[in-house]
Amino acid sequence: MDLVRKEYALTCVAPVHIGNGMTLRAYEYVYDDQEHQVLFLDEAKWIAFLYERGLMDDFTQYVNDTARALASKGNFRGQYLWDWLAGHDVAADDIYALSRRCVSAARDKIMNQKRHLNDIALQAMLPDGRPYIPGSSIKGILRTAILWRAIKEQPARFARTWAKLCSLDLKNFRCDKRIIGNDIHALEQQILNVLTMSDKPQNAVNSALRGLRISDASTEDTDTILLQKIDESMQKGYPRPQEKVLPIFRECIPAGTTLRLSITADFSMLRTIGISSHAELMDTLHAYTQDILAVEKKGFGGFDTNIFHEAMAADAIIGGGTGFLSKTLVRALAPSEQEARAFIARLLDATFSRGHVSMHHHVRLDAFLSPRTLKVAKTEKETWLLGLCRFKEMTGC
Image (cartoon, rainbow, N blue to C red; front, side, top):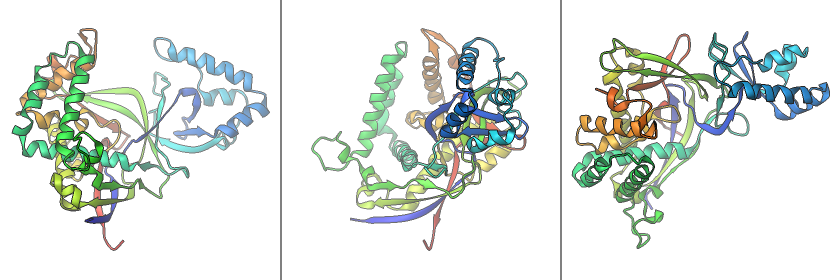
């Protein structure tokens, strides 16, 4: 067995969000708009507090009223939890004492001038409160990068898959989505399932990626940041991108955070798919990431050069809110950028449609770039493309 283990530092060039599957409604957290802090409540302390203060029934009524307000059309005009507590003579120090942790939020990012309430998608955390990136997430992006390289190096080998995708009219999107998924899955098996551990090629034991083991990436830092989703949309004829601020919030690992992980590779398996060293693995990931960023820079680079200058240092795009291009192999399969753009526009039209009516009009509007939206996050001083990370091998570990 040709087994090699290396330690890496993973630095977040931009904020990274890895969801833990939980979303807090507006009545499940407290926002201090003076200190710009979001307080995540300690459930045991919170329940005990409500019971001791005799507020259990009042809080139940508050939740019911807030839920109705959130479900109604138009802007929410209900009462915020901080205000509800203050109205029951709960001091600020006592409110903070009920929290299990606090997260910084940029000014006016939780409650804007229209006084919206919004859900917050929580970051994956270790039991001791430190944010982390699961090894499965990192292996997933490495897997996609390896597939991307195989397709780019042997385009003729996968021409039939591309032709089959293009033959779909996408009118019955539910059926066609299943066909697309099956075709991509078959392509992945064709590239990766090259071992002979089983006489059934589709069996997972034949995947060469069994030779790649990645630990979770963890840090000693406990800080996170709350960021709002912002779309920068570009259409032909626009003088510059149009910003759309969306009522979607994610708890993120801050830019500049460094996490540690290990990558163990069995090259007796990985060589069967063209990976013979850790350096080659990382070079493949970097090339795949920069290919995605080059497409986005082509459409948006003339308007905000700083974010793309920063992105040049990125080896990977990890986590949620990073956009469609970081999750697809369609561009690698397409013989040209124009054909990739046309197919992606049709696919996104079908994805975001009601019946046969397109809601986002990608086919009509994506004249020179598809998708035409850049996913960013902002504070008063910073703008980022979400999910950008850099890997550095640790020596002397």
